[in-house]
Length: 284
Image (cartoon, rainbow, N blue to C red; front, side):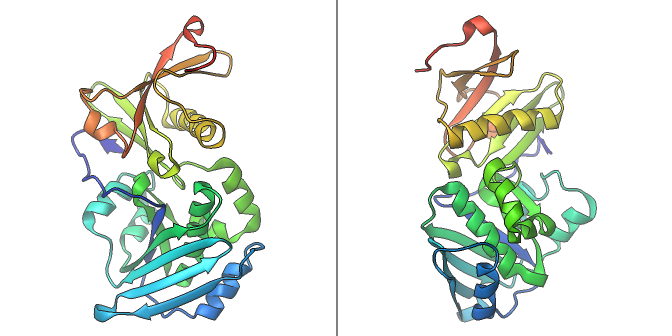
């Protein structure tokens, strides 16, 4: 949950999928054992190869190749910067012990997807699988900085289960793959997605009109899946969802009063509710 008066600092631009792995400590990795665990999750075209080196100041540098993925790894005996936690963990829906556990991490890994993978969803899944394997017993969760979101260790470990991966691939659930942010002011609520740029699609914003968070998340989820799996939506496009919901998409105006809070890293589309007779057949 975010409030207009508490805008977190923007993250640096992200050019490739990445994850931050939250750990109780930075363990000594055994490449052969980790490769075997990674290979056991589901069939791979290329057996995993992992390599790690420790540089000055105990900074870990590593490299992983598996299936068609190439991932660069960096590890640090330190927690994430407070600004990153404020933008991801503090604004998340996770509460109580789960949130505090993620914030209590003492070390972290940075995973950068460098190449391979048939599409962005598969690259993100590869990062989550690697995060679960490398984290092991030290895992506390992950932060997806580009999506202003995070996930606790239980969800990350689901990526070790081949059956769970079927659902992940089909659903690309929010929070895990992209961020969902309610922004509340004194008289209005706005909802926004974060991280669309990682998937090559616009982020979305809409003004609330009495719906609950779950309803708005479901709306964004349906549109996000359409853009990633079917067709990218642009300014001027219209859409029908169900029997009675008709939408039009416009570029978020630069003079919008909450532009700095709502806009994504790349393009951001403002969703407007329209009537059936305003739907355009054959979008431009």
